[in-house]
Amino acid sequence: MNIYELQTPSFLLNLDILETNLKKVQRLCSENNKELWPMSKTHKSSYIAKLQKEYGAKGFLVGTIDEAEVFVSAGLDNICLAYPIVSRANIRRVIDLAKKARIILSFDGEDGAKLFNDELEKENLTIEYLIIINCGLNRLGVLPNDSSTLAKKISNYSNLKLIGISTHPGQVYSVLSGNEICKVSKQESQSLKIAKDNLISNSFNIAMVATGSTPTFFDAVADPNIDILRPGNYPFYDNIQLSLNVCQEKECSLTVLATIISKPKDDLFIIDVGSKCLGLDKGAHASNLINGFGKIKGHDELEVISLSEEVGKIKICSNTNLKIGDKVQIIPNHSCSCANMTDYIIGFRNDIVEKIINIDVRGNSIKPNLI
Ligand SMILES: Cc1ncc(COP(=O)(O)O)c(C=O)c1O
Image (cartoon, rainbow, N blue to C red; front, side, top):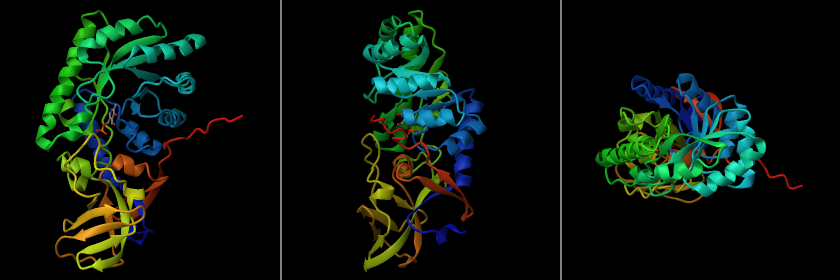
């Protein structure tokens, strides 16, 4: 079946582009002797995670315990939780997983570590952890020079074993042009170096220095201060990465297929895709570079100017050959949020549908037991 015969909206994944993106990032890691542990929150799909592993990924960084649970049941190992887990119910879920696979925790404070350690003691189980370093995003993490102070405090908890440090330079999404990305890459690298030196000079053994963001990946991959790369967005890329010149339109693999359903004015189309497919995301961490709510593939004369829930407005900025009934592919502003809107994506090659890929790692997989 040709993709243009599909119902709309449909979430489409160009498999050739996906595989090229996965292989390129893996090749750069391998050439630079780095390990790739992709962040899986972008695709939330065990099919794509398994492809990443097949191409050489050594582990995964997950944003939620749901992701970790699905991956472990899919036979994937080496799962690092990106954020501190502190509620008892969540700790219990992670402990259950740690009995089946290698799980690595992330902490940025003593209190969270203590709560986890209390539960681990009951099980007589030890889990490895990373200290989260704040390299400028000012979200989670300790300042680089405070890393050994925290490591000393957590060393009192004998069921937690420090193995390394990690950071996420998410402030890169607020730069004003792609040229400024390298400044953020320097912050990322320097912060990790300072933190590692601080820990080593205080006799801590640091085997893993991990970081990740798609925009800084291409600098970080050659950086001697870094061992493990954890980009997330690169399988799909999107309009945010386009606006930062991180990728080209031909590298964007995820699109939403829409039909033009009306032309109320000479310069306006209405499509049957709205915010419930594309999201109203204009970019993480205060990006100012994005105009509109998506990029229509191959049609620079069109701009997605606004979205209602189920329909969208397209401004016709200059001559177009499109008319009512035609279909267009829209690259979402933020592919991570877009993929999270659907249960499945339709994989295709050369415009021919090949397979359905389930987004099987989406939130709230485990319903609470109310009895
Ligand atoms: C801790 C952490 N690491 C890595 C990533 C991946 O970054 P990107 O989406 O730029 O690839 C994220 C993204 O949210 C993150 O929070």
